[in-house]
Image (cartoon, rainbow, N blue to C red):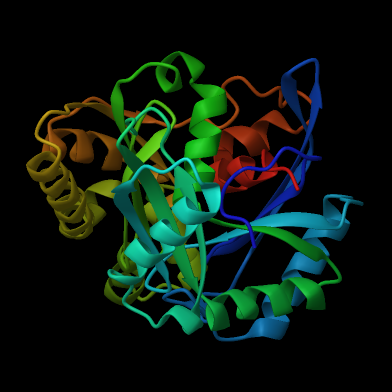
Length: 349
């Protein structure tokens, strides 16, 4: 499977998240992208738990329904993963003019850090051209557990689709960022891309178009949903609505619980940024972009901005992509939720 971009036809972006499956199909005309179709189908909270698919038939069925509802005819998809089954690391190896020798050198260096055996994983890497020198090559390597990848491949095939590119969430979000914020992606400014999902937190600190540091943590805004559900004796769906200020419970009643979960997530983000600063002392993070369903929770952006002491903006995956073909109310409601799916829909294969 491929983790880094290849120049072929656009694929359908399929984001299998723990709270919903999302799909986006784009078309490109004259170097500009527009949305052909997109859709989202929620998943019950017990279907995917901490990145593990507990009920594969339910996920495959939801994917099929999503493609039918969105009237997506293309079967070739790009999909993504994140979490403990994914290992991302930057490595440095001596430069050599022989591509085969460089390839072997990168793989050998990778094996020194892998938390899994070499036979257990799929490996891909991306050479950071602007970070490399005549004597040293810098590369980002990605390793993904084979059994974890196969779990996703089996489900996608059960949905009668063809899995073509297996990406990771961090790089899909970066892809969406590069297309929608070219004025930042083409500079050498350092930016933190932070995706807050239902049960996973994904962080990718980039400089220009190079990923510098990627980290996942198994936490998300579902924790707040569960607290609200328990404290106010609500159903899961009612708690989800209350979390976004759309239920009969006033947000003021929820503030103490929101603060508790916000602090946990922001502490993890701040810890990652602090680690980056300690290891990249010559670089300065200029700003952060938030995406994912968790960022729709009222007050979270402001809380995060205060906690990490950086300008924080909600990433808009349709900032330069024409979405006029889609219901504007749907786009407005789900904009940050669709960042991974948009990034995947920009993949080719």
